[in-house]
Image 1 (cartoon, rainbow, N blue to C red):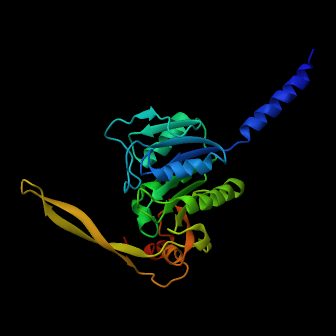
Image 2 (image 1 turned 180 degrees about the horizontal axis):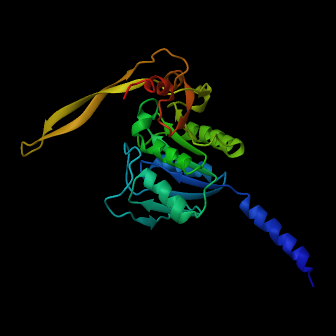
Image 3 (image 1 turned 90 degrees about the vertical axis):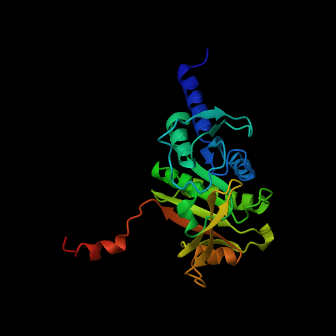
Length: 273
């Protein structure tokens, strides 16, 4: 007969071994069937147990929107052969909230969003559903990363990006991140041998000079298409994400959800209100 104490010891070892594999939440804003998320999942499967909760359709430019005026639904997916995977009718932020509160039943060890088809450098971080999902992960207390490739093509080559993703994700899993901080990672559209390295930088000060292109439908009714020109006010500054990308580096910007202008507090407290 096996000694019960010994049997209990062996069982505890198996439990510890089972728990040693990181739980990784994967989401995006291009939709669950996008090539970018497929590349991201491929890498994450080598690092831990993967749960996918991603929009069931493209949700680019949604920022930190959440669904409050309509129903929210999920449906099981069988695309990626991972621990669990679901398409969600909501936004990228909805996906993270749903995953943490309904599906995983605990905080994942890592939340990764992307790989976005197109850059999310500079001011684009404000509008990005990809980065808002990572920010939501940080709000939940989960080490989180948003990955973007500077290529909007549906046929984008993610070969080099996957190597960068693995390097940075492994580092975050082993070293963690400061609480309330996530990473905004942008990867240039280059082959691996042409990427000079990974550069920690700040978000460039830039903006879109917007225009609304007025057009007419077949019935003669006007409609508008948002266009614009990107203007970089930090041109030439070597510590920014835009400079890094333009000079063949991967940019990594530590990003936080605290939007307080701390430097302005002292000046404003002198106001006579």
